[in-house]
Amino acid sequence: MEIHPTKPMHTPISGQIENGTWKGKAYYKNLKFIDFDSVTEGGSRNQMILSVVAPDYITLQHFEDLEFQNCESEALTFFAEPPRSWANLADCGDFPCTGPKNTLMVFKNIKWTGK
Image (cartoon, rainbow, N blue to C red):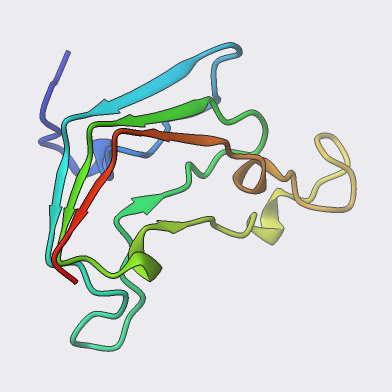
């Protein structure tokens, strides 16, 4: 098991490979985010925590003992829109599955310092 992702397919660490697991939970502890602005120098949206992009069930996401130093609150999370290509009659009917919009994140012991 890789503790630190080394391959592009394993990043971002909030990503999910293939289908989700039922009753699964994801834990992220003791992380520090430093100097995150909501917009990059090139004008792109910048987010610290991305929602998992999966068509169906998204495991409960737990974040504990996180520290944000000089980070803009607008850069905290981003919830993706389901790709239109997920709309197919065999799966979700004529509309995309809504996995990214059904994400629950729990935050405990969070510290904001600086701006």
